Amino acid sequence: MRDGNWRFRKSLSALFVVVFALAFIASFHVGPASAKAEFQWKFAQPWTRPLSDISYRLFCDLVKKYTNGRMEIKLYPNGLLGTHDENFHAVQDGSVEIAVLSPYVNLVPGGMLNWMPWTISNWDEAKIAYAAPNGVLYKVMQTAWNEVGCQMLFVSAQGAYGIGNNVRPLRKPEDFKNLKLRVSSSLGFVRALENMGKGSGMTLATIPWADLYNALSRGVVDGCWDMWASLVDERHAEVMKYYSDLDFSWDCNNVVVNKEKWDVLPQDIKNAVLKAAKEAEAHMYKVQQSSEKSYKEKLKKMPGFTIVTLTPAERDVFRKKANMPAVWNELCKPWLDKKYPGQNMTQKIQAELEKVHKDVMAKRTK
Image 1 (cartoon, helix red, strand yellow):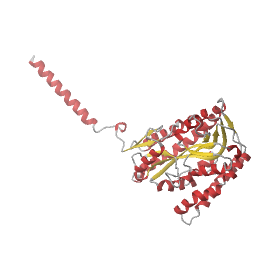
Image 2 (tube, rainbow, N blue to C red):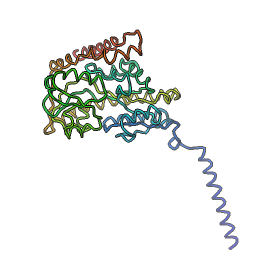
Image 3 (cartoon, rainbow, N blue to C red):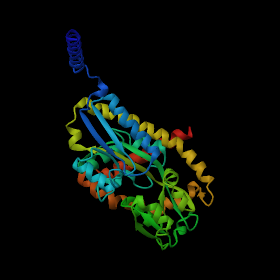
Image 4 (cartoon, rainbow, N blue to C red):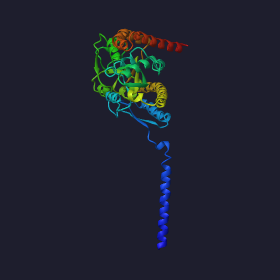
């Protein structure tokens, strides 16, 4: 019996030695999958946009891949980290590292340049003007975001804006008669809309985008500017009767990062993030552009919803009434003169955008 106990204790001691040895060896062979990322960042997405989220998740995955796991970015979609403005301030103070944001001028003084009406009118123009690092709008928006402590990574576009409402088809400026339309803090949009509806009795109401569905359904407003994607994904078409494809402006939100945290990143991490950003942006363009057709087909089949297709001549009437040279001089010139003194940037940017438009149109007619 004593021999048996001795042999048992000897075997148990040997087992402990083996387990300890294996644990000691394993401590020097931790695989990449179990290693903690050196940089763990949060990415705030304040809206419900499932199609865009596909590209944001791709960006996060690519960052992890291209940094060999040194950086991990976690996406928080559907406003999980708060409202749009809360996300802006969180990125500004660094409690959230990355967010996709709209550069409203109450937050970003130079933000109106991101989407001045009657400039970008299609996907091909957008891909040139917003392209990093030398696109005319990318460069000026980088300056605007830097001013408020952020760094732009890439853009998130959903296409052209039309105008929807619940009263009548909109084909000419006179059709704005007595409409109450929702607007935001995008002053370029507001000024253009004010000019297009001047003399019609149209009124405007500032309502957060997140509250738009309820505002339309309850008749708080008659209509709003909108996009094909939001008509479907955010269900705005359920609470509107008419949508005119005015294509008067371009949707383009910006994926930005806290500048202080960006500036101290190692250069190889920055390069990896920028590479991921470029690929995610290209993916988003492809997904959004290919989905636009399916959105239109779905909307055509919706009972009680009518797409009003305008001719180029009909759009041109709205364009002229918008009086954009005056809007540029009012909203853009003061900020541009301050940031780029003596460089005549208002005219230079407008000329570059016009060149982009002409080059794209020339290629399309070949």
